[in-house]
Each structure stands twice: as C-alpha cells, then as structure tokens.
Image: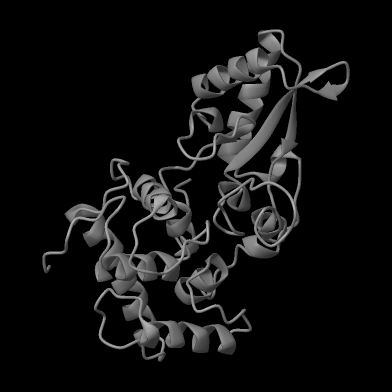
Length: 275
C-alpha cells in the first residue's frame, strides 16, 4: 500500500478531499461535511465514528491503519460493482466519479434513489440481493417477540431483574422499521427538530431485531429519573446487553443491544447471527 499522509484536525491537503469522498461514498457523511481539502471538526467527528465502527482506537486522526481500512472497504465495493456488471474502474480504493456513476446506474436499475453513495438499502441490494429475511419491509413493533429470539430472551431477563430491584420498566421500542429509522435520521437534517441518530434505515441494530429501548415508569408515565435510568443500564449490562448510556458518540440512555459481534455493515452484507 502506498504511503499516505497522516491527516488530523487542521490538515489542508488534496488527500483530505480523497478521504471525504471515500467516507461520503460509504454513506458515512451523516453531518453534511463539505467535500473539500480542509480537515475540520465535522470531518474529525465522522472519522472518529468510522474508527469506532471498525474497532480502531478513536482519535480522529487518519493514520496508516485508518487509511488502509477505509481504502479496503471502497475496493470491496468497486470489485462487487464490477462483478455485477457496473463498471467502476480499477479497484483503487478511491470513491471517484467513475465509481459514483456506477453506483447511480446500479441504483437506477434496482429502483433505488440515485444518490451515488452506498447507503444501507443499496448495500443490501448489492451484497445480499436474494435474502429471505425481508428486514427492510417489516413494520415497527414494541413487542419483544419481534426481536431475535436470543435478544428477546435477554430482554425478558432484563425485565425480570429490574422487577427484582423494585423498578417498574417498560419496553418502548423493539424492532424499528427501516422507514421509521429514515424518518428519525431526517430529524435535524431535512426535517425540523433535533438530530437524534446518525443511523439511516438498515444502519441501526433496531432494524435487525438486535436492540430495544426501555424506560422507567412513574405514576403510569415514562420517567426521566436519571438515577433509575443508570440503575437500569447497570442491570442491562449485568445480563449481557450493551447499554447506550455508555456510547461514545450519541449517548442513548434508553438503548440496549446484543449484536453477536456483528456490525450493521456485516448484516447488510448478508451475515447473520450464529444461532
């Protein structure tokens, strides 16, 4: 692999633009950074979240390991497009005009929005076109039976443990439809309201039945009692769940998940939990 410059906050280089084009092409540009030569705070935030997702220590600095991981992911896309008959040029790891146009042709032929980036719906069509799970068309549900069976079991154990600790807890979201997730992603971006998630439909573990949200109840209503919420978080971790209150990016106190060690990218690529 050629040597690329280390990039960090304040860097000004054509390689920053290449970095941004790759991140944008992989549908990581959730905060609308400008694709230019300037490494700004928005770029650092996206790089940090990318590092989290690929299990690289989060420092917001693009060194050799981050470069290699990013470029390899783009190469995989280019090879896949070429194998499906959508010429994306030589798999060089750069999400340039040829690759963008190949993605747009693929999206057009598959009835998808011609965005030119590998968003979740495009990725699942590209890598797993004949899957039988149909996750993207399932409706939302607050019933834990809509979750993966093992995650449903953990949710039941979590509720049992909260009752044993004198907490009244309710599941307020289990499986979330991809359309609902897209609506949440639009908040603060293309729709009024605050930004509540960096995940599009297919990019959240809710969209795969691997996550649920829970809240304490007081006097029949949802409670914001932080002491109870944190106590719930510790009980969730005790049964083996990951708790959103411990997240590094958007802290999500109601959120609990069990991912089987799979990323949402792997799920979109067709991998499934080992039962």
